[in-house]
Image: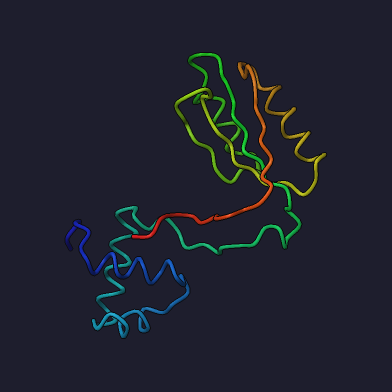
Length: 150
């Protein structure tokens, strides 16, 4: 099986992005190919690491996580990977990025209440070699997706 991504693979990905629970049969009918082709292509995309997992897109505010924060951190040289490893294991963290500019990394995290955010920030600041944090609270979510349109 080819390891190259082609137009059919992209079409399959688009269908799965709309609804990851869509059956191979439904995707095959929509795209005009055999169900076995979809099955094989999805497996190939998983083996290649293009499809990492199938996930549920949740409305966290409806689950009580009304507070979102973007937190910039500045780290002493040479310790960023170690610190990111620790931060990435924290359950409130939904994204963690190495960045350029004024900060070494950006954390995106969700919380139920201010006290939880306060405890989180103090915990990050207590990690050795974290020099400073800068926290921005999200006022309104204008767009929040996991990925881009293909």
